[in-house]
Every structure is written in C-alpha cells, then in structure tokens.
Length: 145
Image 1: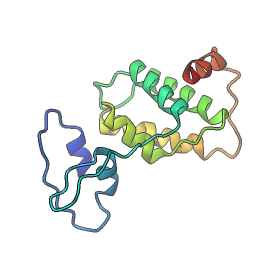
Image 2: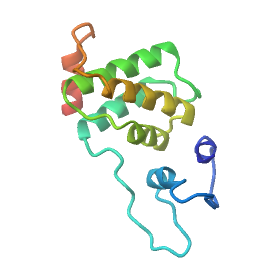
Image 3: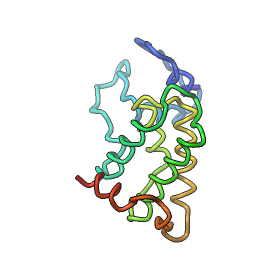
Image 4: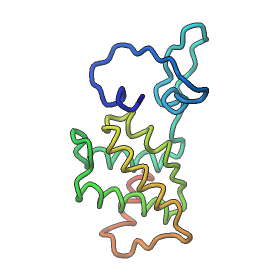
C-alpha cells in the first residue's frame, strides 16, 4: 500500500496506521518520516558503497524516470550496470536498491523491476562475464572516480 504513496507527486504529509508490526519498516527506512510521539532520527544511508551509489546515479540519468516500467533499452542498461558491479565484487541488496531508486525519483514499479534484476544478478553462483559489454572497465573506473 505504501508503494502507491511513493508513486504520488506533491505529497505534503502521510498518516500511516500499520495493521501489523513491521509492515512499514522498509518504507520508514526509505523516507525517515516524523513519527508522532517518537524522537526524530537521522536519515538511513540506504547504500553505503560509493561505487554502487555512483553507478545507480548514472543509471538514473540514463533511464526514463517518467515511466512506471522500464523499456527494453533501460532494462538492458540496468542489467549491464548491475552485472558490472557484481563482477567487480560489489553486493547488490535488492531491497536497498529499490528503496534508493524510489527515493531518487523512480516510479515504484520500475524500482521493483530494478530490484528484481538486482536479486537475480546477486543470486548468480559465479561472477558474471562482462567481456561482451562495451567499455565495461571504463564505466567501472568512472564510478570509482
């Protein structure tokens, strides 16, 4: 239900009454809301790996964030980006990738697609080959700068 709220633009406030404990924990971690009766907390750093963060920022500049789903070219670019990261030994936490994407302007369903792709790539038993990707090492180097 909270993902519908994530997809709305121009919200000033949201009142959340969870039905079950832990039901809105991921949403709360994503947005660090003000909770009535509780002390304010600092925003949670969703992705601490600076290389992964830079790669996702670059991906966000590439994909069309106005659409609810990724088009085939966007998926291809996301697949390449995530495979390069995985091949270079970076951890892809799908929940954090999804939350980061929503927090950075992705529509919830597109962010969910990205998270599913991250989960698929992270679950590979061995590091993926990046030899077929154009300038994979150059892209990776640009994320390290």
